[in-house]
Picture 1: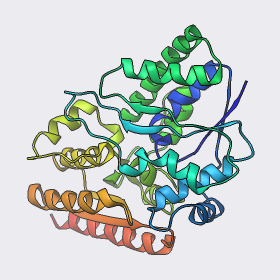
Picture 2: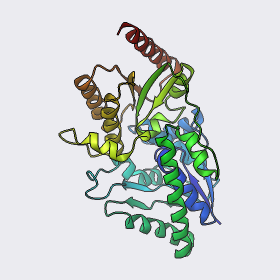
Picture 3: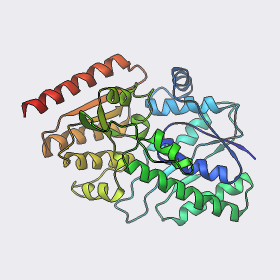
Picture 4: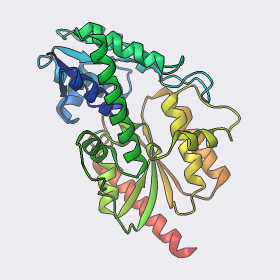
Length: 332
């Protein structure tokens, strides 16, 4: 049995239920890094290259947190999770593609890195090959890997369904990984406002990275909607209303979700959480703002975060935005 370390950031928020189940079913122990903190951020800033965006710096910090505690660090090379013909052939951003190399070359005294290439442009069979490659590396027979993959896929589908029931990832993960758990959400039952909080999963759901944005909204009795609560078919439909889509998977999800929520009459406003120094976000943020003003009169707020972002500044801007939404509602 091996200890497999999984950093609690980036693709963690999208695919952790699959990989936790997969490795556990193979008889290995999964160790997740600690929640993001100042110590983890400081480690990441020290280890990563200076011009990296804050999510990449934080990823390095999570890897450092796992070093010395695990036998392997799971750092897949995420290329694409969309097959040819499935509405485009987006890839993950270049830093996702080069992440295993960045970690390996910038950090020392690390355990072996499982850097399997995840490229599903050829369809589901490519995922079978990914899982079998990991199984061979860890010494698991082919039949065991097939069984583990099947169970992991079922858990991932359950997790995705929970997200679509408007349950946030922290709660959805617990429910998906706990047999017999009853779906329930901490979101307000009778919210004062409904806001779409959009961006990349690792900026929306990491409480330290976004300095507690979702907690601020919850205390203000705001119900939060994200792109992960939408079906792929829904987002694909709205993506087809644009002349051209972007090259990046998470970017297209954020933009297409924006277009969907602009059509929802019950949504009071949109908040885009963007990472400073993120190349794709420099285009995503502007496109979201342009389409919001072109297609609706819905208020739009962009919140940029980096390693120097303070909770007070974000709280002040968000509270002012909420006050404006309430005043606007009363004036209509």
